[in-house]
Image 1 (cartoon, rainbow, N blue to C red):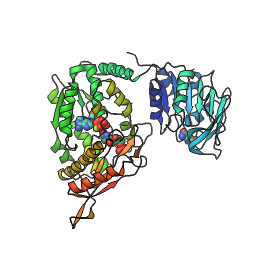
Image 2: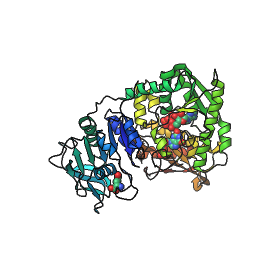
Image 3: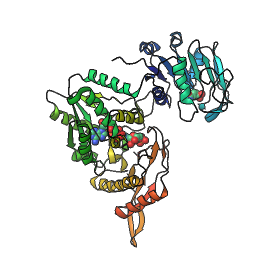
Image 4: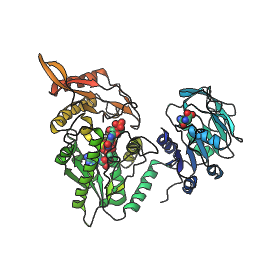
Length: 517
Ligand SMILES: Nc1ncnc2c1ncn2[C@@H]1O[C@H](COP(=O)(O)OP(=O)(O)OP(=O)(O)O)[C@@H](O)[C@H]1O
Ligand SMILES: O=c1[nH]c(=O)c2[nH+]cn([C@@H]3O[C@H](COP(=O)(O)O)[C@@H](O)[C@H]3O)c2[nH]1
Ligand SMILES: NC(=O)CC[C@H](N)C(=O)O
Ligand SMILES: [Mg+2]
């Protein structure tokens, strides 16, 4: 099977490059992100159906700012510029970009002109769009029609339909821009003339073909956690190579109450895939003893996972070595680990930034460019049970990154009890689907004074961190009904002897992250 012609999203260090790529997928068009440092000849060698230039932090007129090679515009490939990409495109084609002193951040009314062109045709005046710029295009290049303006941007959108190029100063890819998806769709379908034929089923077919090609007739193991990502990854690999796949579930002692049993029982029942369960509790807890630094914990866990997979592979291999390790890695894991173009390392996800340097497995990661909600859609299409597909995410390093301080059996036992109560009460209130994830965090090195049974207590606080999110890239704290919060608090302080205080985390992401470490 051939890969469809991609729409390339050229990343200029944008906050939203991955969001652009998924909006393109929502328009039923295949897309790939490439760094702006990739030579244009290499981009063109991918035979792109169109190119989208992302936003970015630089100013196009500043020394050393990323530029666009004119070759891109001579190639005849349709191009769409967004924010920095729009400015860079204007400059490369002979327009003018300047800092006018009129900065616009956040919701801004857009005024489409009567000659609104294809992108903005029939959209209302005062259209609320999301802006984030300090520079402006002050003069459009020759051959372009200016199709909209805003108070701070005299050229807020332009089009050259003959050359199949367009650009906008605002961000159509963010949810806050009204009709943003429609504008991107109009560019792709109506200006670039791309057929909307790509669907999530295509991901399945493409990935199955790709996995077959990569793996051939060799044996494969898959790290299976009970979470949706690895379940979908395993289902894809199973579809591709059947019984060459064995899943390995690692009980590292950092799991929640009942989790190991549930994975063993439910997963095999639902899928019929071979599963090996490894009890690695001593090994992980030994390696983590006394460690308090979050990044160090993550690196240790990443390394131990691989060592356990290696040992399991030796036992599983019927002939020779197992070369391939399947992981349910998603795009946010990669980005947060600093794997994007010029993106910062926020935290090393155990399955990406936490991998040891001497990793011998070749990785099979069919979900590496996708977001969780897309993976859930795939899971449903692959016939996985709803309960598995809608399970809340749970990080591979488990409770180790929810104990602030060193990790040991005793602390784990305390957190497990508190966590179970929170999960039970959330489910009892029928709120599972309304909440993206609900970490419970133990501040193991903090103590506070309480009064319980007329006596003094000196116990630990537990933090409730329920969040809502679309893709874990950004999140907000969930406004749980106070009765539910109150019930959880009462039960935890009554039933978990070591905990005498429950607090609620009311921080969005950014500036917080979902997990505390
Ligand atoms: N206990 C485990 N045993 C084996 N592999 C694991 C375990 N925990 C995590 N992994 C591997 O690490 C990958 C990343 O973990 P992550 O938690 O992001 O995904 P997930 O558990 O599959 O899904 P979810 O994000 O919904 O929890 C998993 O897809 C899986 O391959
Ligand atoms: O498998 C994982 N290995 C990790 O090392 C890891 N760190 C964070 N997470 C999960 O990723 C999402 C975003 O988390 P943060 O807002 O805390 O960065 C949330 O869903 C987190 O639970 C991880 N998952
Ligand atoms: N969001 C962006 O792409 C910003 C572009 C440019 N840095 C500006 O401030 O105008
Ligand atoms: Mg998980």
